[in-house]
Image (cartoon, rainbow, N blue to C red; front, side):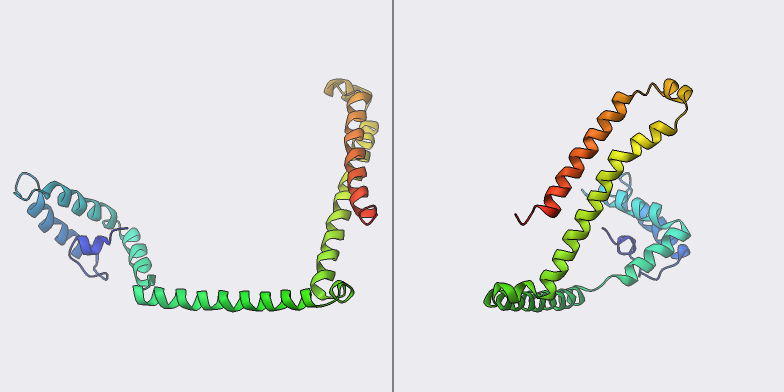
Amino acid sequence: MDNYFRTLGLQNDADINDVKAAYRVLAKKYHPDVCELPDAEQKFVQVNEAYEFLRDEQRLGMYQRNLSNQLSDAQKRRKEAIYNEWVRRQQAAAQQRARANANSSYDAFTQSPVYKTAMILSDLYNYIFLGAGLVLVFAPVIWFMKLAEEEREKLNLTWTSVFFSGIVGIAFTYGIYHFIFKKDN
């Protein structure tokens, strides 16, 4: 993104009056009818773009705040170096934990906090999906039974549509049951 203050030859803390004054001078200088430079039109467009953007005081203020928050190239490199060092250390620690797990017995590994947490989360997800499957089985039947005959006819609902929903729910529930209770067999 262009620095519009630089385009107008101003410092980043310029106010709206400075912007207007710089624009008038540069627009006159670079207008293609007046300027003989081969890139006069391009410079004129850049000056106009900067002015159009900065002439709104609210936008000018936000732009100045954004520019003041930008980091220099040296600051960016330093920040990136710190981040890269942090990533390197985290990777080394993860690798060290992985090697320790690889060098331990399987029984010791299954007692580790990492393994236990993974298994708890896996079981939790399975039970959530089992519950969702049961809802898929019973919710349509309960809803259908609670509807008055007129409402069923109005919605064009039959036992066939409820039966289909139940079959889908049963299949879903059986699949989850299979993964929860039969996974070790």
